[in-house]
Length: 431
Ligand SMILES: *Cc1c(COP(=O)(O)O)cnc(C)c1O
Image 1 (cartoon, rainbow, N blue to C red):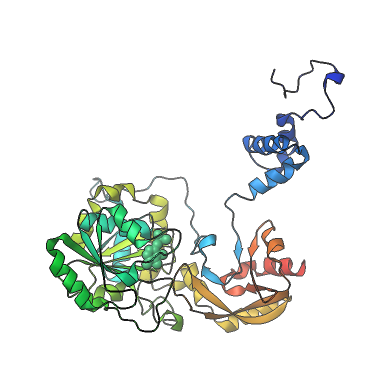
Image 2: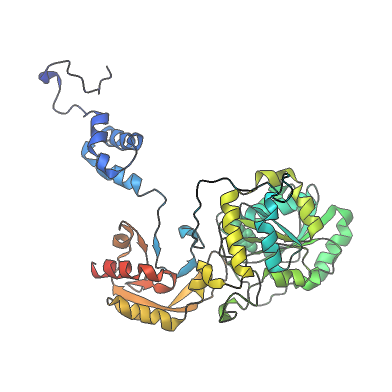
């Protein structure tokens, strides 16, 4: 018998009043929290170990709050990294698929023949492949095209994007060597040409990295994609954000003003980049993925690298990407939740804010987020309530994530699904 088992042996007096309760019994007593028994046991055991068995329920509830769960994003940040970037619906039955079967020939097919091909079509690339995220995409491109050789990159683009994506470190891991040119604020085409002349065949690739999340202002200079394309080496542009086409043909209202500065995959390829890399869950509005699109011969070379196998996505991601790509090809931005939210007019949002019937209706600014477009503000509307109520709102069964400005809790309706408005209203009026 273990000391804390619930045996009948021993007299009542053996059971000292302050003897720890049975872990198992305590775990059973909090079963209504709804966690699997082993996790209830963890909560019970840790509470008992800390001499506070009454705290077991609170610990179990806290544990259950750590599960991945839907939240209402009222922050106005469209691609909120903490909230999973682009919102996306995806469900599928428990079924097999033709993931790697060519239904025409009955032969083995390629998982890259579906979604990646559609994405290539949508951005005017010859071919594309998909990996797990953009960091992986950059690493695979460099490994595939420049392993053991040099990659020429401007000193102003040796950036850290967040979540630990640091260009120099990714390069090192890819097996390519960094050839830095220019200065922090100014780099010219001639700097690249000099490096190529100096390193010869050892300089395998020219890399251009979008400074997604910061800006250098003042005395600056950087060669345009079209200039870098004149260099006799493959030009890889890591645009990161995943804007597919600057004309935004999928939006009835045309390209929004706040996108003006953002490089797009189609236009970057047209300007002469041989490959572009971008995230699936930023402005592309799909699942987490990294897309490599451009010249078919380079895509084929990259696909043969052993890392391509290690970084390949599964059918859930490829299915979600396929749906997103089809929406672009159909010119139907409304079926991509990110674009539907991004395109909402301030008038619509103000009307919804008034309908909430609680708090003070305010004009506010949304942001794209996701480490894209620093300083960009998208006019929006919502409601404000005096005081900081973020914690209360977070504690709801379906947490509502809001922001606080000048001592007021702001609910920005741009990132709230209209179907959730009533829930937001109920939460605010209960404060
Ligand atoms: C966001 C970003 C990345 C990293 O993308 P993940 O999909 O998060 O790995 C890489 N490069 C640029 C330029 C980015 O903006």
